[in-house]
Length: 471
Image 1 (cartoon, one colour):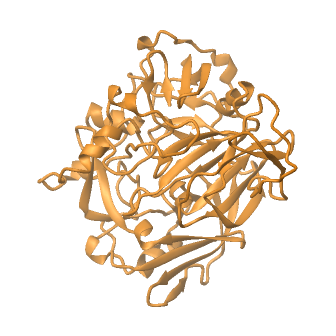
Image 2 (image 1 turned 45 degrees about the vertical axis):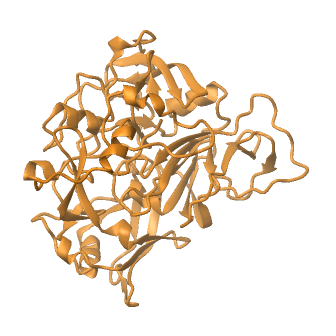
Image 3 (image 1 turned 60 degrees about the vertical axis):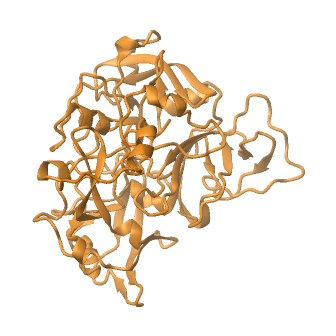
């Protein structure tokens, strides 16, 4: 996403717990252990917005944002998504301090009263207060693009099984309002052995928190069974790795013990089972070095679980949606989790027009009646379908690669170069081994393609592994 005139390229993470958008300015510092340089700090925040460099910037109105009251400084500027979509004057906050200790990236609030989605709808860019999210795979050998679609969803990713739930905002421990019950977790090895993680334990109620860059967070007695079921040995004296890693506070094991072959399956509401392969469960640790580049640390192996003791509410993180797909329709106050197809085809973007109870292909030529699960429709063209009226827009596809929730995306060119050079000769020090997240190039979505050629003019924050951005 680009802000200001001239455009400043920044990377954002969608946050379902907030309504407003938060952008870090040049005055911000890092509250992350082992992020000890300005370059690494900038990488972790997704880039910096310099209001003084934008001729289109003006002061925002804080009285419009009293509901969240997280930050006091507000700005207003021109926002661009791709080549053809823009908001002439959009309000966002410039926090004086980092909002979250373990998630330092700039955020687009996509909660029920999202100012960003409302601005898109008021501008006639989308025809519903809906969005969908697919994280993608950044650590597997075959990387897979992730995406966010405002005003619709990508039909090509959605598998056959899904479950739709109403929002439940009664639990203060789940401000996102998206609660599901996990009815089964199984660990299956290639030898045919199947371990029931819930054996003798209760099902788990989990909150969707895709700003958390893990598959899930769960109590110690559940998570410990998964680690032991893999035959892995902890590489840290704590339940998880240290704060500041690319996967913050994630469980780490010794590489020699990371020999498990199989998959982990998580069943949601007894209706849809999401599977994770060995590649998604065990991979090398990454860290941000002092120059702001992401490096690989082969002395640790990550298991993307946050194992908590004492137990907190279980949560499904962003990486859960590397094998699942999330669709949210605020107009109907419901959300859908679907299995994601294992094979990635060409994007097939479908927009949702809640007011007219219909969906539309992105080319804006056909409509069809919405099926019984409107947050996750699977329409087929109808010869009698109506033409879209002028001004009705199906949706915006905002492309990303491998994990919407990763850090900066302005390092596309550096990412290409880093992949072609060998890793550093020296072993990572303790201060280097743990960092935060990093950047990535946009995907090949056909509509409103993220423009990358001018990214080399931005502060090039490296994507030393395949991370993701919202452009």
